[in-house]
Image 1 (tube, rainbow, N blue to C red):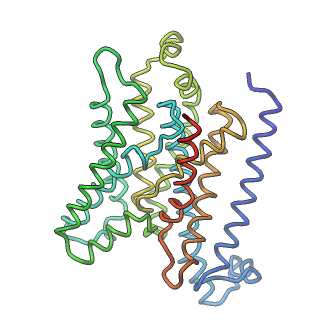
Image 2 (tube, helix red, strand yellow; image 1 turned 120 degrees about the vertical axis):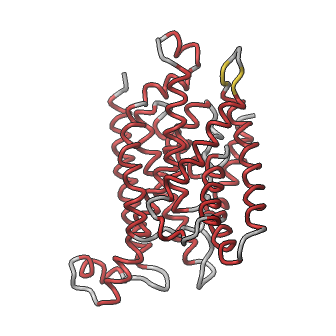
Length: 336
C-alpha cells in the first residue's frame, strides 16, 4: 500500500517537472542562430508569424524539441527497467552494450545499402531494434549458467564487454568506408542528434506509445526483481520469462531512440537514480518521474550543445557525457 503522502509528493514533482520542461522548451526555441524570440512565440504558434519565424519554429525547432524530449524519456525508461532487472544502479543501455549493438546495425545498414539513409526513415528504428535484440540475446546467452540461470552482476559485466567489442567493430567498419559515411557514423557515435524532422517523430512515436504503458504495467514485476529472484519464485512469478520480456522492452526503447539521436549514454543511468531518490524505490511512483527527468535532462544538454562553440556547437551526447561521467563515478564510489 502506497501512502497518500508519497502519492501527493509524486504528483507535485511531476507538475514541477512538466513546468521545467515547458520553460526549458521556450528557452531552447528562443536561443541559437536560428530562433524565434519569446515575444514572437505565441503569434507564430497562432499563425501570425513571418515566413522565417514559421519555418524556424515548425520545421527546425519544434520537431527537434519533440524528438529530444521523447528520446530522453525513452532512454530513462529503458535504464530504469535495466536497473530494476539487474538490481544495479549503474546499469544503462549505453553502458551495457545495447546502444552499441543498435549502432553497429545502423552502421552496417548505412554503409552497405545502395540508397541514402534518409530514404529509410521508418526502417532505421527496426534496423536498430534488430541490432539491439541481437545484442540482448548474446548478452543473455553469455550470462546464462545452467545451475543458477542469469545473475544480474553477470548480465552487467558481459554487457560492458559487448559494449567495448561493438565499439571496436564500429571503428573497423569506419576504416574502410567513404569519407561522407564515416562523418555520419562519427557524428552518430558522438550522440549528434540527426533525426530532427517530422518523419523521425512519426518513426519513433509508435514505439513509445506502445512500450511506455506496457512498461508501467510491469511495475509490480520490476518491484519483485528489485527484491530477489527467490521472492519472485515464491510469489509465483515466471522469473526468466519476465526478465526476457522486460529486456526486450528495454532494448526496443533504447534502439528506437538511438536510431535518431545517436549513441547517447548516461541519461538512463541518471534519471532513474534521481527519481528513486525523490520518491523511493517503488516503480509505480518513480517511473513517471524518471521519464520526465530524462526528457528534461536531454533537452538541457541539447540546448547547451547547440549554443556552445558556435556555429556548429557540440554533439548532445558529449554534453550528456560531461554531466553523466562524474555522476557515474559518484555512484560507483558510493556503491563500494
